[in-house]
Length: 434
Ligand code: 5AD
Ligand code: SF4
Image (tube, rainbow, N blue to C red; front, side):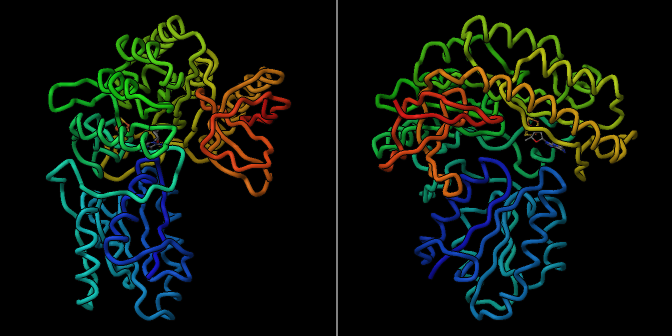
């Protein structure tokens, strides 16, 4: 029997899909395949913005015909969207052909739910309010070699006013330090070359013995072997000199910090409940760059938050220039039911929102392009991670997160490669192995 998994959303979800694959293997499904060939199709959903949900709705709806044609096909829908209040009932009514619903805390239950569905006619639903035990005991089927994702903390207690994550992922729960370290040691032994520590808010990590995030990072980077370390996501309110010191201390830690700023206006930051100011954010970046001059910073930005004025939007533009970001993910504010911001007055119209995001994207692209152009003629070191069949080139990222493409006769995936950059196009660099 074969499986097909469709994933929406963040790295956390990509890794969770690797765990879903692990559970499916244990339930008797032995290999991945296309949706048409599969005996079970699992959707791992996201609800961070409305368009993520609409995407999933469309693709789930499209399976109605396949489900009718193929006897025995199971369809399961899980993850953040299912965990939203009242959403499982809504989905059940909208898509009566779905066999299994499981929430964000129900992954360890999935095998059991599949077995139950094989016995019962009606759909099975499991949406628990919280996880009881932080260790899920699931061996993931990893699909991202040479990178391996490692969860360090689940959930979020920050309640940024626009964000649904605290409602669907629950309260913060850190894994035990030794569990994390032994997982990393095993991955390095297996040959993984990049370890990415994952959490909605990694800075909130507290080990069973009181270990802080910088201390954990220090311990991970002290493990012997030829690998590098990334981590995400950090919250600016938790930025600390201790973190900078650990990043500076270890060559293994990539000189890249993803530090979502969201907005450039202090009034909007306050409405977002972000708990830092524009000035504090820029001061922290200055400290980071004093200590690690070549460190690159990337960010997330939201435009058209309720009541955002043109002047306040321009403060986001000026912050982007001042912060000298290497790149940024940009979003139009999307109201999420149950969050504080969804109840605020002063929604921004679609035309204004689209105009703002267009201007922001143009600025971010221009800054990225300017940065990339500086690399022509220089040599960078990338970790080769994949082959791009369209471009007929291998690709990988350097420690700063820049993407480099190159031609190669052998299969260099998993090798650290020195590339002499010959041209740049937007965020991508092209080069030759030296
Ligand atoms: N609308 C738009 N963007 C959002 N994000 C989170 N919630 C929303 C929302 N309701 C963005 C933030 C966050 C990233 C993962 O998604 O920028 O950092
Ligand atoms: Fe959402 Fe804020 Fe938590 Fe990030 S820190 S997951 S934006 S509530």
